[in-house]
Structures are given as structure tokens and as C-alpha cells.
Length: 147
Image (cartoon, rainbow, N blue to C red):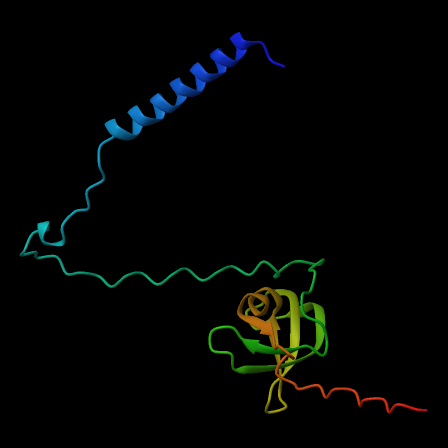
């Protein structure tokens, strides 16, 4: 059982901590949003369109020890719209891409039976394995009671 003096000191410290938090929250300045009509009405500057996001650099290019997520036989679909991408035929540890770089790649056979090569990192970020939950599995036949 703790000494009663320790309980008082602990209670006082917790009370001081709560008081300090309350003071900080009360005295900090509010963050007021800037109204949209506060900018100058007439401007000679032309507004430039927003810059396109920088393309992501593939992490699989130049890697000799890429750990593949998909396996041969996996049916893939695109994440944004769910359309079927195809079936993974094989993986390649080192594939030469048209831009001169090389790296890990997936060979995927599309619905039109053509094979395409995809950068491993880009495909893993933009595709998913199609769910097999849509396939109905018939129930096993009920065993007949034998007498």
C-alpha cells in the first residue's frame, strides 16, 4: 500500500498537468481560414494550371532481389475500376524495358490472350487479385442414412 504522502504528490502532479494543458489550449491563437474574396480582384498574372504530380519512381527497377507479391496463375483486376487485367503467366527477375532500364517484371496474359510485361512495383500498386468469392461452390451431397 503506497504511503498517503505519495498519493497526495501524485494527485498534485496530475492536477498541475491538467492545468497546464488547459492553459495552453485556452491561450493559443485560433486558426482562422483566409476568406476566398480577400485576394486582389484584378490581377495581371495569368493563373497557371496545377502541376501534374511527379510520376512515382519504380522501386523494382534495378533490384535483383525483388520479392514478388503475385504468383503465376493469379487473376488480376485494376484497382480503380475493377476491370479484369489478366492472369499472371510468370515472373521475371530481370527484364529489359523499352526505356533502357531493367528490373523485376510480371508477364500477364490479358483477356484477349495477348501477353504483356508490367513493371513489378507499378503492377503491385495498381492491381489486386480478383476475389473468388463470386464463384458459387455447390454444397456436398447429403449422405443417405443407411440402416
